[in-house]
Length: 181
Image 1 (tube, one colour):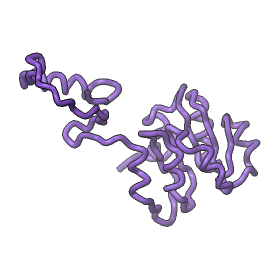
Image 2 (cartoon, one colour; image 1 turned 180 degrees about the vertical axis):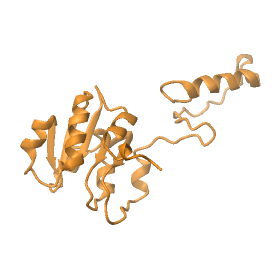
Image 3 (cartoon, rainbow, N blue to C red; image 1 turned 45 degrees about the vertical axis):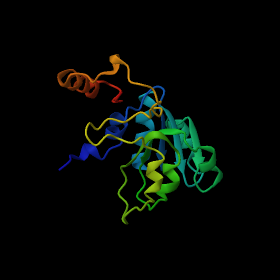
Image 4 (cartoon, rainbow, N blue to C red; image 1 turned 90 degrees about the horizontal axis):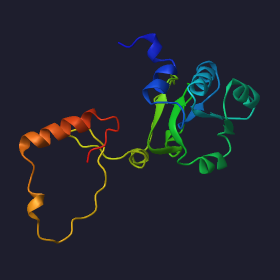
């Protein structure tokens, strides 16, 4: 069972590396929302508040948000498509997750810290455009490689000995990027 601190916005902000160079969106500016804005701003992230209306815009900007957008305006989702590294959902209302997933960069994350009364639903295809495929064996994100050319194999392209391959995979799994070569 998780402790109560895992529900607060600090855990996802820390886990997904909010900080300088990262763009964080906070959905809702209520109790949890204002905490998320203040924390993300303090961590150095570029913070955007996404709220149904512009009523709390002054509050959001005063708390440290760099931008504030009304989600009731459909143009908002077009303008912000592919913008955010992390979206922290702090509201307990039912949302159109598909629309919010479109706001993520590739490999971005949506984290729900609000507690909606009804289950949230989404279209599975909304997930495929925001995530690189992972290798089931190593858990590393695979890079796309060019198609092989029709050349004769060179002597230098002999397979690595098994021990060298294993050592290389262990080093790669421990690397900070997590990308497999």
